Length: 76
Image 1 (spheres, rainbow, N blue to C red):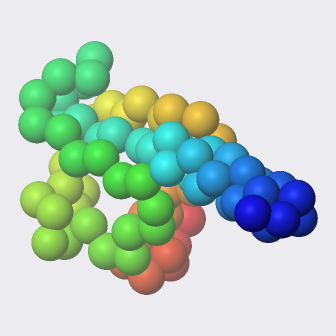
Image 2 (image 1 turned 135 degrees about the vertical axis):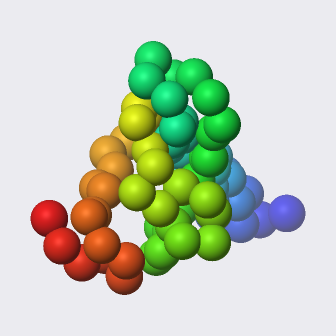
């Protein structure tokens, strides 16, 4: 394999590993207890997850997350 191809593959693997490890977990009870829902990427609407208007606590693993009040990334 060419040197440039090896470098490209290494950079791609590093970027993918960083994205794959970023996640947020919502819990329906305080203190990170109860049922949980974990997302590793954007979720446009929580209605189908059973967590719409029910999350009471959250754990963010790596990176930054933004949580919006309404579906489709709307609201506060």
